[in-house]
Structure formats: structure tokens, C-alpha cells
Length: 176
Image 1 (cartoon, one colour):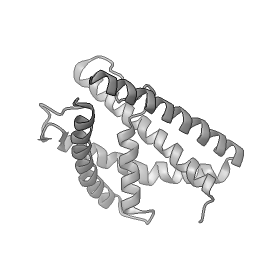
Image 2 (tube, rainbow, N blue to C red):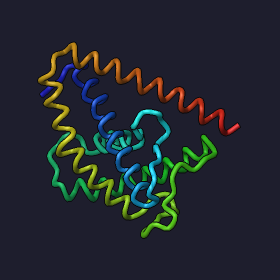
Image 3 (cartoon, helix red, strand yellow):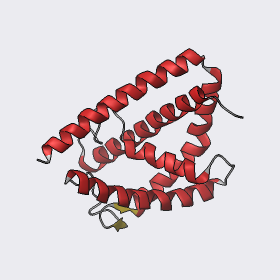
Image 4 (cartoon, rainbow, N blue to C red):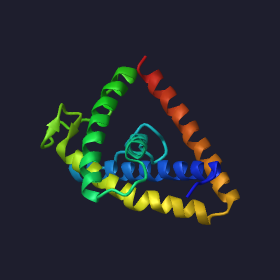
């Protein structure tokens, strides 16, 4: 089904928020389980970890919307997101002179920047993305009124971009 531009924008904004929120929940839960205290994960003030949403969009661009077997999606996604996580960790460290995460001491750690455990979790999250979130967002953009989709997209995009600008500015100032 061919969607209008406003429907595609709504869908991507909605998926960005939900994927980033799931990433934030996963990260906060991991820290809680491992260290028994709350840490607001990610670089944004909002409860969104953008790397999860960007990873989901990379997978969507690579796999498309064709039907795929969940096992294939799991394995392919685990490999791709692990490579993405490794690359992103080096890039963010280069830009901000700070390491944002470590898997030091984790079983199957890959250069302390990823791990086989996190790769499996990313694979599971990707299966959820392709078989639950992506179809759900398609149904939502078909059912919700155009004005609601446009309003949500504009408001949410503005909030995320403003938060990103403030957060990156703070990180750049902190490195000086």
C-alpha cells in the first residue's frame, strides 16, 4: 500500500520514539539489575536512546518490508546491530571524548563495546520491531486522522530535536 508523505513521516517519528523508548527501558533495566540503582541512560533528557531507533531504521533500510523468517531477522539483526554498536561507540568517543557505554566484564564482550549477550538482545528487539512495532505503526497511520498524525509528528519531532540540540551542546561544552 502506497502511503502519503504525512503518513510516512508519522510512522517514522512514532517508530523512532517507541524504539528509542524500548532502548531506554532496556538500558535502565540492565543498570538496575546489575548495580541496583537507577541511571537515566542515553544522551537525551527524554527517555529515548536514539541509537536503538537509528539501528532499527538501518535494519529497515537493509531488510525492507518484505516478509522474512523471524530467525533470519534475528541473526541478521544481531550481526548488523553489533557492527553498528561498535562503530557508533568509536564515533561517539571520537566526537565527545567520552565512552558512553562499556561491556567490561560481560560474557562474550567484544572490545568492551558490545557483547554476545547484547547482540542477542538486539536480535530479539529487531524481531519485535519487524513483527510488532512496524505493522502497528502502519495500522495507526491508516486509522488516525490526518491532523492527529501531523500534529503528533511536528510536536514530537520538535521536542526530540530541541532535546538533541541541548544535550549535544552540553556534551560538547563538558569536553572542553
